[in-house]
Image (tube, rainbow, N blue to C red; front, side, top):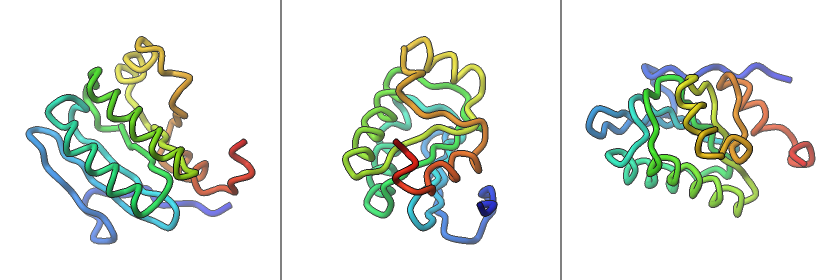
Length: 139
């Protein structure tokens, strides 16, 4: 198993950034998966841009890893966007997984009874390894 580098927002590689209000969305594409980092809140103010980002990412790759390590809050609208993107990814034989979510974000996801819905990983490399493994291993 190979080690996958953690993306850096100063990376000059295959990444793109969008700024919406106080939030920033950074996307890094790799073969088979896209890493979407949200810096700031996942809420109504960023929902439209995040939805478009997920649609664009899914057009390239069936797997999305959402890097939440710098996410400060999530609301019901943000959860709805994440859930819709996961459903779209699964229709394409992929998935949307969450990585490095702060304790507060995890508590909101669990309070909404979505803890069992989203695959969650402690780190982005763990999530990437999961996403890029053989499809037969995802059973």
